Length: 256
Image (spheres, rainbow, N blue to C red):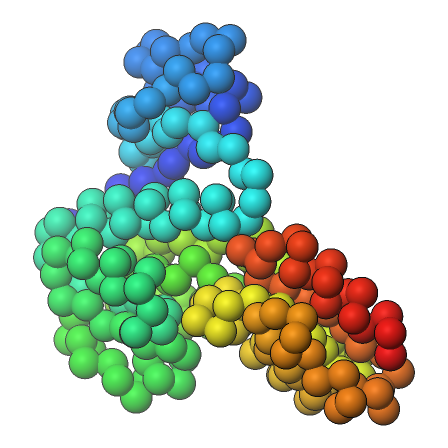
């Protein structure tokens, strides 16, 4: 049984999501108004475009005042997608940190067998559904895009694979920026919660460049004496890190 792709239209309020939804499905199913926030519930329809059939969903607008707001919205959409994609008992392969609350929440929406793994290497070591033909692949919203693409390629070779694009692009851009800085810096400061998945990922990205990295939560944790030998010190921060803390860290670094 082939599962149709599910496409969600998301974006800021009052930018034309419902108009696009109506145009694609050929019916005026979604309310179109000039007032932001009119669309409250998800609306579904079957569409055909360029010879391909898929289901489309219109969602309420989101205000991305900060990356963490977008992440919360992405997580909600991922839960919905996993629930619907696994209703036929399809196996879920989830790329993420098994102990992370987001991953545990996503797993709870799976309606069939579920395998959680933190890397392509771990997937190859843990894979227990080798005889499973139909697989749905999803990821924790803060995982690295490059690793996810490698996992997709590997699984596509032996399974009928459906992919849920659940990685947040805002997080991916932040990781790319951290990588660019780390490739030039002699040392890197990563500011954010020690339990935050996206902040730890930034630290991992920086460490992959072979430089000294310190992951701190508050300015008082800055190792100023240890940083004195370094000429170029990079600075990045997690999505939920308050601007006031980032500014305070930056001011402390200026004293070196």
